[in-house]
Length: 68
Image 1 (cartoon, rainbow, N blue to C red):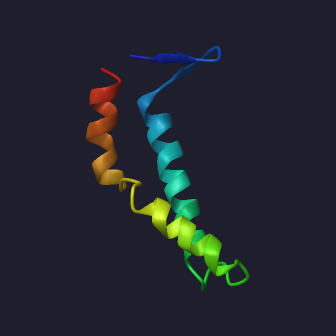
Image 2 (image 1 turned 90 degrees about the horizontal axis):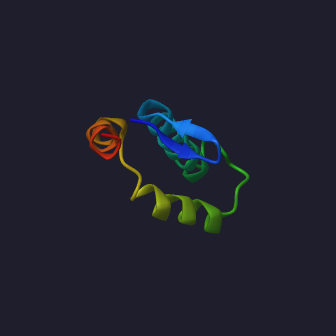
Image 3 (image 1 turned 135 degrees about the vertical axis):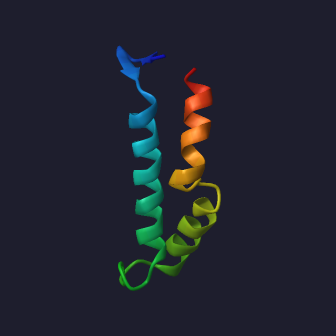
């Protein structure tokens, strides 16, 4: 099933990829070896948000049930 958003249709795999991409960005922000010049406060915020992002294996069942 597709859900329209601003004239577009969302597919479960595209939403899952977007969430996984956002999780990866937060992971990179929270890593001092990958982004050494970022302030500590930004790293801590990224780590706090990262706790609530599902890993890819957890995301598939949720997306499948949400879009059915």
